[in-house]
Length: 110
Image (tube, rainbow, N blue to C red; front, top):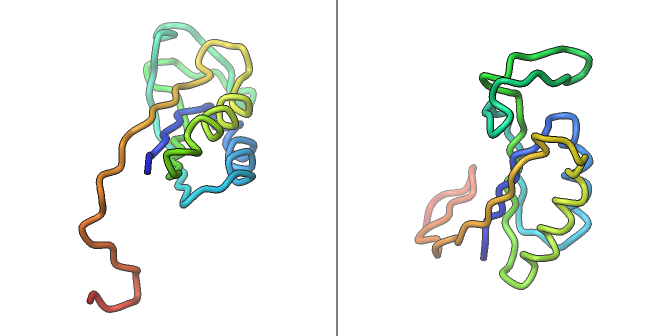
């Protein structure tokens, strides 16, 4: 199993989540984050508001998929998040170590 982490522009989050939901996935999480990359001192527009790019608002989407579905999921993510402009984001693929114990919330540990 792999965890795919995508850092994308906030206004693309719903489109990206919809794209990855079309494939077989184990789980998805979405978080609001801030960061910057190569664009550091440039200005950009997000929802008609200018931001100083010390730290830009971004969204982090984590998707857990079986190893055989990694390339398909990356393709869906990148196609949905691509605008062709600087700051489209990054995609990282991380190995998932075997879970020693997983407990569902609301259920007793066994």
